[in-house]
Length: 237
Ligand SMILES: [Mg+2]
Image 1: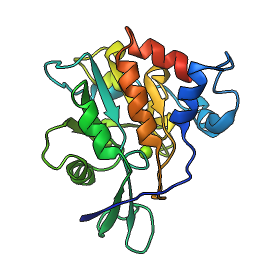
Image 2 (image 1 turned 60 degrees about the vertical axis):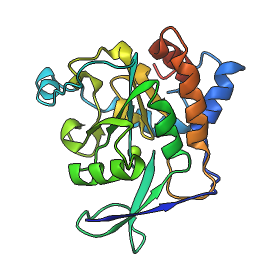
Image 3 (image 1 turned 180 degrees about the vertical axis):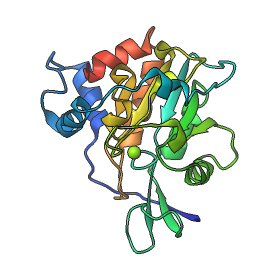
Image 4 (image 1 turned 180 degrees about the horizontal axis):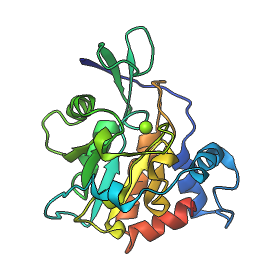
């Protein structure tokens, strides 16, 4: 497998972060986000998930080492920071062939700027080889991303269709110290308060979602309790 990189510049994708940010500052209601809206399908899937067992969590246990920032921020790869597909246009299905990886607009800027105030960890449901190559595209000098977690660190749903990124696998951080960004709510199904949802990126030009995400995370970092504030902003639980 090899990855070629390409940048995208224009898009009309829905901006979850923009919507959330605007809403929380002005007209947010107390309606639970699960009830309707763009997350409805994700919540239908989540309702059918069986919570991971302690054995499943402990078998994937990781230690991040000495804490250098107040919060650790986990960033999804596919359709969040990048979009990869085969030369014939298929999305990443066969890892043995060459992939074209589109880096989402603002992805590198986001990583560079946030690395001075968050501990950054890539957390993907993809395999290790792909994860490491994509992380290298985003952080070529290895200065900003502290750690990469991949498929082996995810917990599969009982039907094998979904991968859950359960933050409880991190043994040396508390849930109040961790946030996770993902285009799928299913990924953080069991830590909704920690989850930051973004729209999915498939390579369309002009996408600005990560610009809004950057603004959101810079402001969130200033909060006394970022997880509690995020929970109230997204209103997922
Ligand atoms: Mg994703």
